[in-house]
Length: 227
Figure (tube, rainbow, N blue to C red):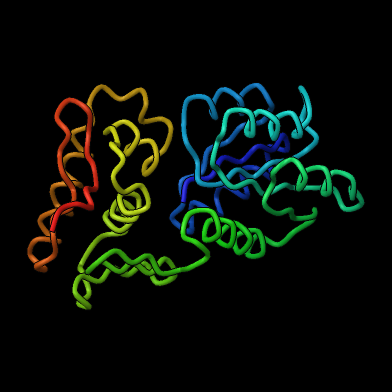
């Protein structure tokens, strides 16, 4: 999961980021509305962790922006203890859930996972397509009911392909989603090619269908019409 943390308390934001990174997520930070708006315009995120009170505006403005731009990210509001109006307004404007300060990081993690399952996986922890089965709890991939020996990045890559099946994904988009926004400034994306190549080789070795195809000049596509 790739998460954008919009929180002006840098110590809290850093603590959340460190925890999520420890869970092998990609987390990006924005300390104000302007930075968050810029990141949301340039990059995609699975979930947004959104504080309401920000130095240059209000998190509700970002919720309006997210809705106007048809951004599909899940949104988890961070609200003050007694801010009932913020919770209600946020949910009415399209937020998926809220957590009240102070909170325990495992609870935050559980709520993010629940949002991701609802938004991206139809509420399930299992993602199944034909002979491919991905368990997002155990991070295990099966091909024809046999365990596929993949790295964590290869698992995340396969999940990203399956969730976005039949869409052309650029190398830049794959890199930013799996490694972070900083990859946008890299000169080349050969490391993406290598990871895709290794994943395809492992799927073929397990006698699975190689649904991943190269779209020359653009990137890759998980083509469900292949058999």
